[in-house]
Length: 224
Image (cartoon, rainbow, N blue to C red; front, side):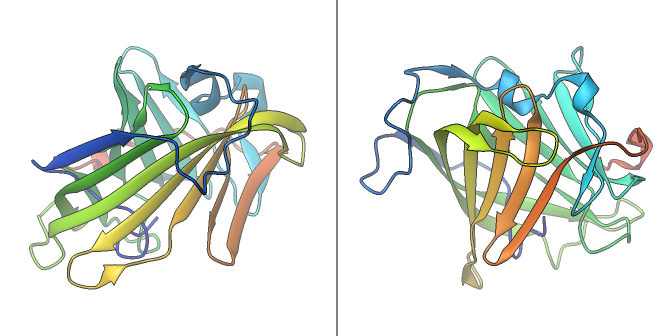
């Protein structure tokens, strides 16, 4: 994800509103309260995966963190972490091609740890960009806003080797204060399968076929 066209960050002002939206695609059979971890983290035998891109899942339960190395490149990944209240977007080290550029949020609250349909989150914050030498890129860093929404879809077809699974869909809608809103991104998480699809506008990427190299992350490249 590129936050200027898709991903944001976090500082002081944060408003969280839980409500049922009139245009929500939530299924009428949505459970009242969902633990997101069985959706966020897929079963080990279903990783790594291929499709429109190659992606692996690396889970550290001690750190309470999940990372996804992409394109079989251990320097090209993003990581999220969790506690009892939220899942946080920790770092994106997979932007601007294979350049080593990365960004992180000062407050990266991203999705609820326990989901009660329908959930929304509006964030006004700061994004911090780093160059490959971990120097802050002041020209790109600064205020940022983003809007999160999540819903449940029962028995969605994940395709490939995943089949039909209950799915959580996370919508991320960034808003650059300098440039205005950009197209929202959608993340799809299947129960027991983890993250298997991402889309923005007409772009759709699926990684739903089991196979490929089991790539780890090079944590030493993470800045901050």
